[in-house]
Image (cartoon, rainbow, N blue to C red; front, top):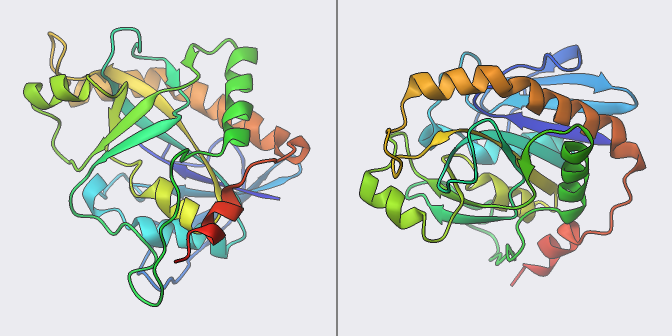
Length: 259
């Protein structure tokens, strides 16, 4: 079994596992964000990719999500755990905590959303966009390791790269818990390819609905202070993946989406 990890802000390297080699992958959708890093944790082969590229040079709206996800499947990953940094839209979702998302809302505007622009029509179901088996694994690890976390949360994905206005942030508070820029279209592309996908988000700040507006310095400071939590979660998840019994319908939902 191979585990794919697409690391977001704060998880830009594969320091939590033994690196074996780096592989360049050519895809029908252009170049991925960076070479894929192949390594191993225990009995599990791990494929790592920094979402924003080496040195964090690719802004959210310029990420080649299709190439990243296609490359993961091409290299044999069937399960993906993808961490990200997010802002909080609720008082009780505090900076430094983890959120294992269970829903997302798409407020992006100009991205490549599907592998099926031509050839056939695909209406893939994203009613429950994350693999529940992977979510249960991540939730159990957070509980066991005493990591402050939320076992569900709605992630609203905005286009970026700018942060929200106060008016936008107040609106988002009505229907979401956390806010970020990279969930979409990553999640739905994984569903189209029948991959098991889960997100684990590190809350770095309160969004601008709060009294003190978000700023990059605060985000970076919180990420550095809490990146070890994400690394522990990822390493433990990789170690336990061989014993996980999958009962999800992620692969079946991809097949059922063809019109």
